[in-house]
Length: 272
Image (cartoon, rainbow, N blue to C red; front, top):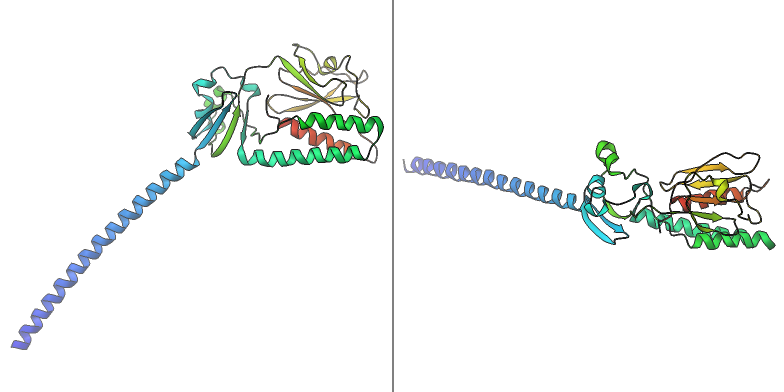
């Protein structure tokens, strides 16, 4: 009888212990789940904060942090008077890559000049000096017009990382670049075509006398016929660049490749 009594007592004690253990385990599991969920939520918030972009606006030199989407940027009150057709937004890592590409261009121009002599070498070195004064950036080719971004959801892209935005006022000039005697800023005249801007401008040795390239402020390019035999009216807009490149040479593609590299740098040019 004593043995049976002890067995029942042991059984009762064991069942009580097991129930307590089960309750503790369930409670502990709930606690673990709560901690995991809390950690997940925290990490999500941290990721969201990290994923949002930081943008430095020029020429104001104003930094805006945690900009989630493009519309949040272009609707900033400080940008109310910005001239959006010529605005440029760039991303930091892309800017580093473009700067490397630009340095390669300068090295290629130096090498090209070294292989020439006389007026040809002087002309190439002149182009190199012009391009050395150009500051490139990792331009993102997106439409920045606030009305467009608001109306078209696909244009309202997320911003992740570090950006720079150049959004100044509309310029009153165009810029002449390339194998010309007087490169630099020229007054913008409404309705004036590419060939008219080149009237009275001497072209240097090795220049293309039949075509020039127009680089519009939004980064688009157009090849403009400017000779008397192929002339076509191609207008420039304020802030455009007119590039007179190298003429094509038979059995030598170096100059055509150089034109394309220069065009690439000019489309990624940072506004002044």
